[in-house]
Amino acid sequence: MKSPRIIISGGGTGGHIYPAIAIANAIAELEPSVEILFVGAKGKMEMEKVPAAGYKIKGLEVVGFQRKLTLKNLAFPFKLIKSLLAAKQIVKDFNPDISVGVGGYASGPTLKMTERLKIPTFLQEQNSYAGVTNKLLAKRASKICVAYDNMERFFDKNKIIITGNPVRKDILDVSQKREEAIHYFNLDSTKKTILIIGGSLGARTLNDSIKKNFDLINKENVQLIWQTGKIYDVEMQKEAKKNGNNSIHAMPFISKMDLAYAAADVVISRAGALSVSELCLVKKPCILVPSPNVSEDHQTKNAQSLVNKNAALLVKDVESITNLVPTVLDLLNNEVLQADLVKNITLLGKPNAAIDIAKEVLSIIKK
Image (cartoon, rainbow, N blue to C red; front, side):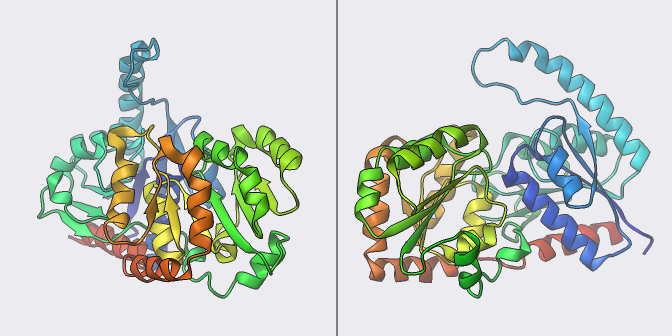
């Protein structure tokens, strides 16, 4: 087979970018001669994270359509036309054998232009409720890899392959890294550790839930690894210093997520697709607080898929400030419930997702 040429398109958040990079790495592992080009949205995270992972990326001036009335929507049609024309030129210049869409702003124009040029397309849907872009692109896609059951509600069942979501390789075995993690985060090995992650951009509700319950936290023999998000960092660091003690380790972003998971006894997390997939693989008891600010409320649906199998606990966003900290402290003191949650979440992990998706992409090229 000649060296395959593949476009991978999408992004916007870590939940789209990291799986895309994991797929690219798996393809390169199976087919070292591959040439991969990413297409993302200008000004979004992928424009920084993808080159840092060693891949080339082109940016489109594309934005999402706002669901509420706003002047920003006036510019939407013009930016869409501009991004479609730019995407068409990128596809023609690179001449890929296939385009892979992972969701996010840039995948729509890129895969639409790929289709028009009669080049095969391939989708990876990360959530339990399919996104608008992937639903529109699904009719012409060769295959659609998904992470959840019952996705035939959205896609042709003959195209669906359940692979799970690809995750970073370094989190596949965190059980051996606890000692390293304790040292890295400067933790007390005698205390139980709560990890709080609100997604790559942080989460106001999670941060406020911690901030307003320092008194409860300080009464317990616990410590926190707290990812605040960049925009909340200064405020939360100040609050932690004022009300907390040496047991509260607040930081804007956790680059060593494998060590954060390794140190944690319990995890509090949003319910984005990537977070849920990672939690299934790190095998930790977790409390999910779905974000209400996402399309089709898909985070609640992601979380519910675990809760229904007694693999996680759920605290609603609107009840988080009152209920989250008491729930996590109760869980820390209930070893029977922790063991049940770990046993059930372990059954849901799919550690080979990236390689399985890579094999499907390459098989379409070979055909």
